[in-house]
Length: 267
Image (cartoon, rainbow, N blue to C red; front, side, top):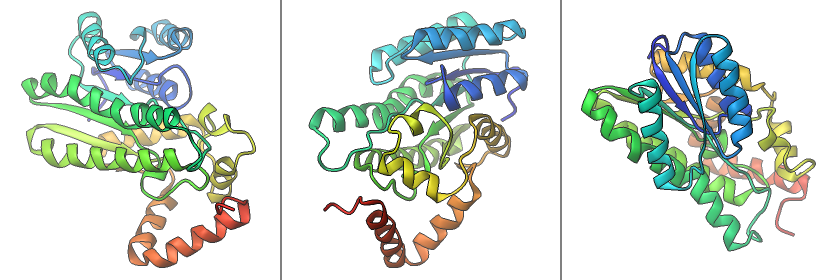
């Protein structure tokens, strides 16, 4: 998919990767962008930037865990900007916790990291299928392919997110719908730094280079153009995934050593 002339919706668009994608889509000539975020002020700030460079933009406060709110978001985007051809379901949360995380934490992680993708697809797919084309980009994280040492809810929910994206791609790929799973590793965003000094942050920074949100947005544009399912801003993630598939036992042993080194071995 080329972005020129398209209308896009970006959730989690007020900061980080979402904001970078919104700006990058504008630079590619998008016809309009709805910037959604739980932080309406941040969403408005990004939308105003897009307006300033001549791209129609709408800001909206949305809790992506609320199906009705997501449906209303798509309605608002189409009313203000026209048919939505790209939905980037990007909002996500980490916990920096293990099995000690309480039930509310687990539930919120599943609501935001998994069910938000379900709600976005539920709202967008009927419109896209009627038109015969459209694209979904779900931010799933490298943790959904590998693991996140030090964060059990994040690991479990991101694996579920990848599985759902794969199911969507298989089910609707022959009906004009392209689905991508965006799986970056370390990115310099509030999500990474929210648990400053946590085991999960240390593990990410040890794993490889930490990219800027702008570098991830660049990868999304290329991935959409090439119609890739897996968008891997960190190429090493693909290498690790192949090694994990080739020798799962060795993979577990290697990650166990890292967890022990960081004090995340359950003791």
